[in-house]
Image 1: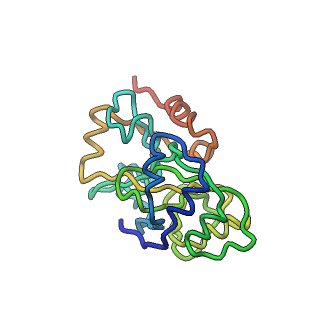
Image 2: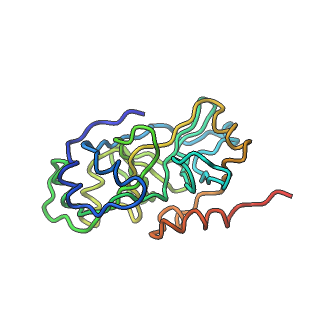
Length: 221
């Protein structure tokens, strides 16, 4: 789950950002931007009991401050463990041109702003671009059901020129579980899961995502 260090950008980008949320202090201290991805294939037919490609939603019983009221897109889940990224905690917003400059990438013609999201407590210096399936480049993998991850820095430049994916989310860090750990937390009623929906994952109203996800919960009778 290690990424590749691209460049030092923290000072430049932090000055241009409008920081917000509980993780603002963490983002302000970041000095590297890493684009990394777990290069795994979608779950096979024998892994249908796992949650790859679904949304994991914290219940009101969740007490871990890293995950209170979070919604997590599950990138990988099998017998060896699980990995996902939080999709409802934006932490910083700034000029994408400034970000590209800080990364040492050509920013000529770049326009627009970009939002960084807290993706989880593990490796907070690693970045992941979760996006719709309409963009493919070196380093892109399809996770499942129309969602992809790209580990090529060129995706940021493509986004800045209006040539990137139709919808995208840049996250820093990820959530990880060892074998059987996530299953135990679900049995303890800390989580429930629902099908992933593009409209929910990429909703610009991040604060509403958790409530919307809870409303989609299927109640067992």
